[in-house]
Image (cartoon, rainbow, N blue to C red; front, side, top):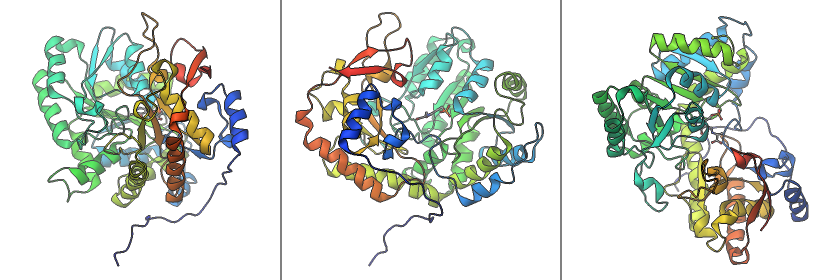
Length: 458
Ligand code: F0G
């Protein structure tokens, strides 16, 4: 008999979670104004809101925490982190920040100006926010295949070279501070970018004199997909692949809450001394002195270990095969999901799941709420609520896809939890024809409405 797969870790500490009754959940959801962000974590059984900062640290990371050096300047923990980042990325300069969007804020304060154009592959919301708040524009150059959930393209995070070249031809070089490649691409479903595409983007960008930066939140997961799916890459280590990828960039921003395997943190790494010096000033203003940038020494110590662990194959195999396990179960039950299954989450296509719910009544939010009522599982809407209103017309913006994201925290749940989640979604799927009405907005803020919007039954 072939031995089945088993995780390359055992569990040393557990945290109790409790299931509730349907009646309790109905009352809590109503009090939360039908917005899952307003629930208390104690009202949630399995929390798939995000994979960001919600994973489990290893014994080595908890051990490193005790060795943290809390010196304001020049701490040993900064040195350890700097050595690790240099080793993994090849970049010489490091500026820690308190999380990923803070790294964007610091770097973009140096690089992005009023009227600039920043092409890339479906920029993450905060990234786009940090571009737009500077009156610059993010241009999405993702390949069209990414927007067809059934298309099995192995690298749906790829940049369309024609779309990118159009941007380079349309705007003068001075208006394009950089091209941003997000690895893996969260906004298009945790989809990877191939090394071949990154090389081609580099070659094209060099011809126009435009540097590349990486939004690297899930860079290790991206390297895993390259190793698994790309010809000629199968015998390389994750660290070798990641280093080659980073070699094509001028620098990176990082949310350490993902592939850093820590609960809080971020950083910028880059090679240009002048940009580093300018970014250092913004780090001091916004984050803290340049050797801690908003992080405790102990958190930098744990991050140094986390980055090393996250770039090891056995860890990545267990991580990504668990997400795939859940995705395959949902596919087996006939549930429409984004394919291939992404690195950190499974995305349910709610336009196919609930075609009878009007788009103006938020089908993805409706489905997310039904999954919560069914089994106490918290997911997140990636659809019309998230897409906000058009700033000029104040009309709803209807994105191409209306998704519910089931983000899987790292090393946190077992495959029994995955079975439970899949069964809950299946139950909702079986009674989908009874769900005919969605929600309407009772109150919303001017921007970023999905976090605080208050809904009522439509
Ligand atoms: N870039 C990407 C690709 C992200 O997914 C995120 C965060 C950030 C940048 C910002 O990093 O949260 O540390 O400030 N994504 C989280 C999510 C919030 O749930 O996908 P941060």
